[in-house]
Structure formats: structure tokens, C-alpha cells
Length: 277
Image (cartoon, helix red, strand yellow):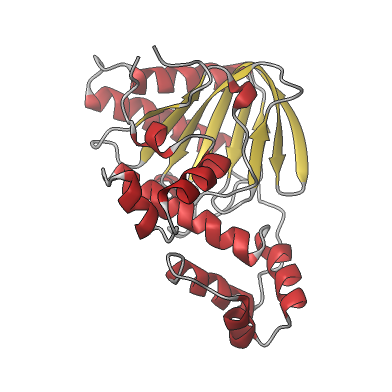
């Protein structure tokens, strides 16, 4: 029987744009600040927690929905060892962008951030549970599951339409180029000297400026990308040791420690895509 504190993951190759995470007892499930390339929508199904989202801090509890834009740094963690449970749905950003554009909610098929961080309306919470229940039910047809997801997310996007995220200054071109460099070389050894040479910044100025715009230091950003590479490999069925090396980690134990800190799950727990009992 799976321990209540162990996260479980649902994935289906027929629905590659979706991934669902379930935790029944989140008291020991702690995250370091991190970000995702996809859009995330979660529901607190029991208890209460804290939701750190960029500079904001939210108190969330059973019945709350939380929304996270791609690349926005965040972390959800327990409060004083109080129990809480949740379901988190990760949605491919390109897929959701196409859905929003097709619904006439975006002028162009380009992602626009959604400013809402928390929804407490009971109807949206109940609808989320119905949608995720459909995904978790192996007796439901594929068309039925696809329809549940499309109907709910389309309605939610219409509900949120018209809101615009508080604009932030675009990072200077130099910092955007450094982020792209880290993306391209995430699995390689990258030195601060190299980044300074590329940018012309001093080490201290580089670290402060990068964190100001991206929410993470260059090193934390690199590690976050490496964990994402590891997740991609694990979903492909790559053995853990091989996934660790492919993602740029020196060895499997280092990969496991870092993965657990950012994903709040072990690599072995993550790669299990069936809800095993």
C-alpha cells in the first residue's frame, strides 16, 4: 500500500499535455523555490498550507484552487506539521495557449500570463475535482476524458479572461541571453566566470540582477533546469542513473537529493505513472 505521504503521479501517453500529482498527507512534502515550464492548476483537498508565489504569500485551505504561470517561482509547504492534501495538474503551455487562442481569448497564439493566483469559489473547486476524477478513472473513455479537460479549462479561461498580469520590466537583453545560455548548457558545467565574460557584469551584480528578473540565482536556475531535464528523461523510461548523467548531475545520489528538494518526490516515485497501491 502506498504511504499517504508519498506523492503519486498520473500520466497517460494518449494525453501527453497533462500530468497529475496527488498527495494525501503533505506534512512531509516540502519544496524549495522552483518553477515549471508548464502551467499548473492545483486544488487543496484537505487541511491548509502556505503558497509562496513570487513575492506574495497566500494562506490556502481545503476548497482552494491555486494557479501558477510558466516560469513563475513558487513553493507550497505545510504549516507547523498540520495535515494537508492536494491534487496538482500540470498542463503543457503550448497546448493551453492553443486552447485559449481557439476560444478567442488571445489575439495571437502566444502565451499571456494569468494574474489570478488563488480561486476559492466552490463551483470551480467542484468542477476541478470532477475533471481530475475523470482522468483518474480507468473506465472512462479517452474522448470523455478529453472533453472533461477541454470543457473545464475553456470555461475557466473564459472566467479569467480580461485580467492582465501586473507587468514586470522585461529583463535586459544581456540577462535574457544568459538565461538562454543556461537553458542550452544546463547539462554541462557552467562557471560564474563564463557568465561574467558573456555579460560583462561583475559576479555580485550578475547574481543580484539575474535573481531580480528571474526569481532565482543563476545557479538555482541551472539546477531547476537540470531537474526538468531529469523529469523528461524519467517520463521516457530512462533508468535513474542514466537520467542523472543526462541531466548534468555528477552521480545518482546528487540527482536524487536535488530532485527530492525541488519536486518533493524521489525519482523512482516520479517515474511511476500509474497510481499503484
